[in-house]
Length: 171
Image 1 (cartoon, rainbow, N blue to C red):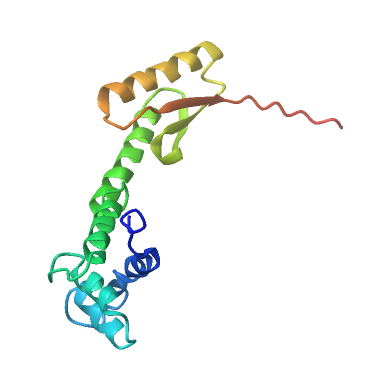
Image 2 (cartoon, rainbow, N blue to C red; image 1 turned 30 degrees about the vertical axis):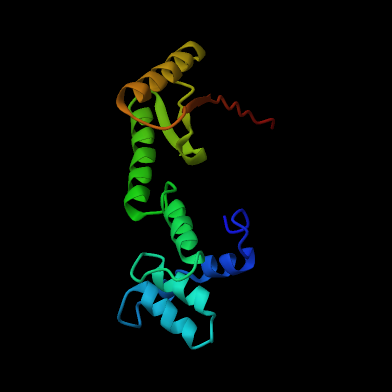
């Protein structure tokens, strides 16, 4: 963003890299992570621009340069990605567990694994209990049940595996 605005990209990257450094030491020191980070960086003679971006990226102090709002914007964009916040991560894990639970609820299914960040579910059925025709129906039924009971971005591929292993020994 800084480059697009004609600002010094290396200063912006430095401020962005260091903006949450206070989180790494906040268990030892009292205060908010922006304050802790700025105070820590002062000891190493960090530039006033970076100090203001670190201290002000949550709006605790007014920005005195254009890099502070850029760091705040980049921080907000980063925080909105799926899986970055604990609550979002918990929802993500629950969605994967729900996918696996739905699939394992079908007769003949031995295991189910949500993979590809929940964009695919691999279902393993017992080949002795499920024939080829039944396998196709189970895959369709799982997909239908997912559509009915869940909300998710994009689509989810259901891959059903029915494996027959034949072992014989020559003596």
